Length: 181
Image (cartoon, rainbow, N blue to C red):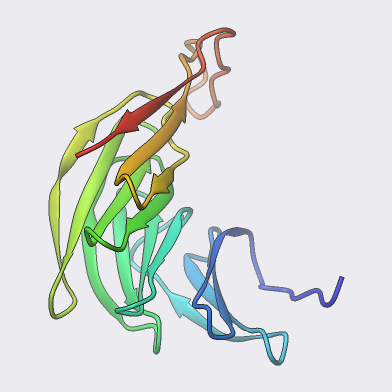
């Protein structure tokens, strides 16, 4: 272990800019913590308000844009200064965000069974392409940047009586939803 860095909240996904900074979604503070790897310290906290509950996070290294998946909202920030560039509607229950740099597409995997797709256009403009039905529980995401496919692990879930209780997976129903062009 080289260092322990307190980020000041409940960390979720982290991404690196490849140039000495790590960005971490802080779910309970509705912000992104910016870590300087040279000093091994948090150098900034960037608010995502009015969005709440950031979980998934991805980055376009070329345009230096961060894509933070929050509750029903994708927040796009400038990774050089934390300025919010756009807030876009996505499905409910986002847990993962992925980015395909060749296609310039951002994907937000939402547990309600929606894959929200956003296009990054020239001039740091963003457009929602649509919400593709997937499978309830398909919240985790992986992107194959070469084949331009999105992988969403999911399983059938038991019905639960409590509204805020996470339902259990039904044994033998796990699979991976594959989304291609």
